[in-house]
Length: 536
Image 1 (cartoon, one colour):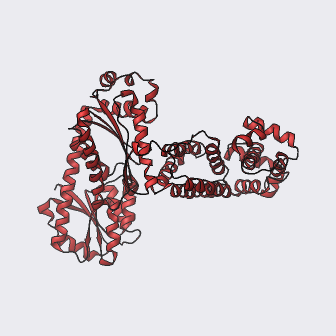
Image 2 (tube, helix red, strand yellow):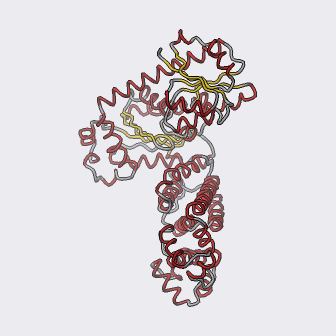
Image 3 (tube, helix red, strand yellow):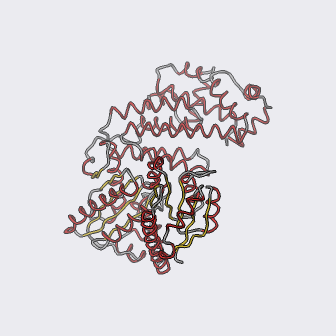
């Protein structure tokens, strides 16, 4: 037998019917297990690793969709065909987004069943051949593939290309010689592709991405040099061609766009946007044109829709410096609110930010793009290591699911609120009640003359224990935490109000204005009056 299958249905008579109707011997399929619950099916799939699973939508313990998710998490990848009654038809059809090959409607008919089985067998054959080809390629050129990804793309994506601090980035000839590439003297163009395919499958190495890469290899690379790299949100590509091929490049990009768009017929509705850079003949400007392509893709937030955006359409828009006091104040306020679990302060900042972006829809997208990634870098400093990857995913989804600037701000706010709430819940569960009560007490009473003993008494623990708890769980001493919290609030008051420095000092818990000003300068590097002049 060439293929193996597991049948899962809580009705034994349905399993028997499927066994009777299927042309198993003709198709070369062996039934290796029959299961009546989601748990049994999961155990058998993990143990036997079949090529195909025929599973009912509704089963005891957990249903067909939950079964698929758990199997994928276990890194077992059989093809799935779901069985459904008419009343669950739409439910089954939506499962196509989980890489389900097809679905069968009850009552199951012989012709319908065998057509689906034939289709799956063809898919299995294609997958096996692709894996064989990839294995062969991997055996022949493992080091070349590694060098292409790490030594070509990593410096390009991280902005190191322009610095020229690697020998293989000095010239086309050096790059070709050291990396075994075939870059030609001529023109270069960058393309940024952002789609929701990875989000739909909850994985980067999906069948959809395999199809895209196959299309690039089969339809583009024979016309010109095309170098591509998969990212979390899609792809970045570098086209290398001769001047007389400009029209071919334009048509190739359009063909790729519509090919990916047509995948909707298989995977359902998706978001898809292309950003295209300007053209350059200077090899040293690859990092620059890649940045332009990323920036052009961000331009979609101005048009609130899918499509292709070229850098030349947005390059003349008014620009705001990322280092402007107003931009930096927004970013710092967001980071501080997340760091100190201040949902109310976070809401105020995002309300102001939403108003600001709604009034300036014509701003050059590159500023917002760089601010977005700059904010991510700062926020990740205060995210536990084991949660960084998930935080990044949720952060990027906030962008991916936004249709305009205002919606992006809203998505980011909701995402960060969820993060804070989860962290607070984690404090409760992991560390018990004392630390979370202590943090909340400080947030509510920082204006008063509180000390460690006051907080310890409110929490109901000893001062020694609370002091150790702050250092071990918050990675900062109690007094330092209280001081930083007060000074961050004073920064907000200095920037947002006209209150005298003396009154601000009182409002954040300092009776002595001179002591407050001295402490403020020590922590921030400038006087309170200078801070107001710069950020107010």
